[in-house]
Length: 102
Image 1 (cartoon, rainbow, N blue to C red):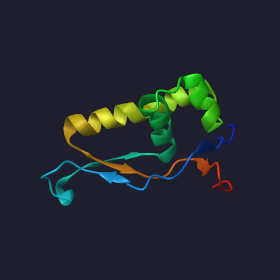
Image 2 (image 1 turned 120 degrees about the vertical axis):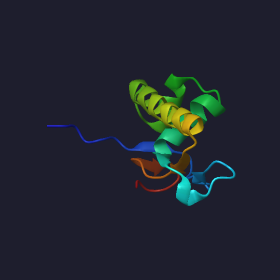
Image 3 (image 1 turned 60 degrees about the horizontal axis):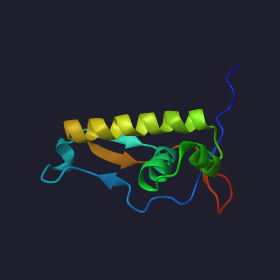
């Protein structure tokens, strides 16, 4: 039996949830989806330069789980930039630390 996924704590939901290449019509684009918890991991480690052990504590998850989130998000972003895909930020298993669980 598989263990249920633990919710990941995030600081807030992103205001902007879609990015696309300039000059290409939306109907012509393929789309990749990045979860909100993957974005939070990227924000903490890559943008805020917080070490993975501290970032994992902020998200209330283990360091290996954070590492898997980062690997997945970085791969998706690299593919989107390389192949010209749109990036949609949506979903994930998370709760906002100021509010009740989602």
